[in-house]
Amino acid sequence: MPLVASAHVNALADLPLLASGKVREMYALSDSDGAAEPRLLMVASDRISTYDAVHPTPIPDKGKVLTALSVFWFERTGHIVANHLLSATDGVPEEALGRGLIVRRLRMLPVECVVRGYITGSGWSDYQASGAVSGIPLPAGLRESERLPEPLFTPSTKADAGHDEAIDFERAVELVGDRELMELVRQTSIELYSLAAERTRECGVILADTKFEFGLDGDGQLIVGDEVLTPDSSRYWPADGFEPGHGQPSFDKQYVRDWASASGWDKRPPAPSLPPDVVTGTRARYVEAYERITGEPFDAWLARTTAAAGADVRGAA
Ligand code: Q0Z
Image (cartoon, rainbow, N blue to C red; front, side, top):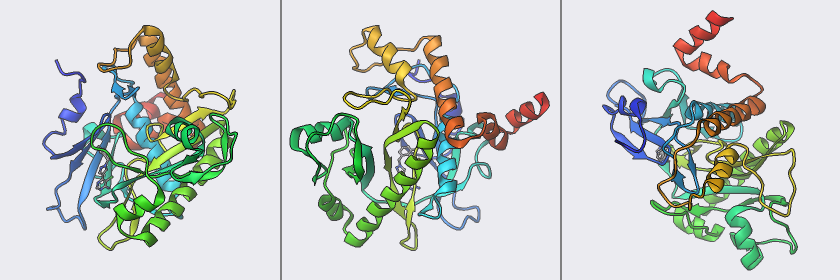
């Protein structure tokens, strides 16, 4: 039996699978149907990973929540940078509705664009070892999880397997091969982070850090792609109880992490299956994140994107 039951994704298997991540798939769409340019279908599954391992138990609607959050942020950041989103409905196969997006196919830049507003994770490790992150010297005496004086751009390389490698800005310029473009990417990344962090703060959610992926379109214009400002590409913390000096709980995955730690799992693959109360509690946290950040019920997303659910919602009203 496969590790992950993925009937929805398999139903899309007549499309060429271009790339498969731990929790997402990307398909090529035919460009023989009058489309102006090459397009992709990106599909977010309900799979969840902790400690870099994917659990065999899905979190119902997780893929839809992440897709909905990406769309929310794409719609609110177009004044900062153009994005790859074409549609969450037109052209999305029925079985991927709500979790799939049609996007412009780009020439992706070979760097991951991380912005950190707080000192945590690998940034905290690097700071403790050297007093700097991504070659940027920081004030002495910062505590774990502390807010930084200003958001930092800390790029990394894209590793096919294993962990991304932190690099400094000069190395990112070398890899991209265009200093001016890389300066635009840095400025854009920081503006995107700052806009999102200010909004989530008002919702009681701290956006500790996030990762963007950019590409160029056929005209060489900079476009933000991939997923943006989702819980899988970002660290979201509850503002309630925030306290520097130690690691913070994850807004979305903390039930899974706490349960996994208490279970005695050694955090090496394979990840254990999850008990029903952890699944239910975690789904509720994803939905809560969506509703707090967007200010609308998650059902509103389902109604806009999934015809049957929309009919259900209207029928129940
Ligand atoms: C995204 C990734 C995923 C596995 C490449 N608009 C684009 N054009 C070309 N390539 C990409 C994009 Cl977003 C692109 N990834 C990340 C996504 C599954 C890997 F759904 N890699």
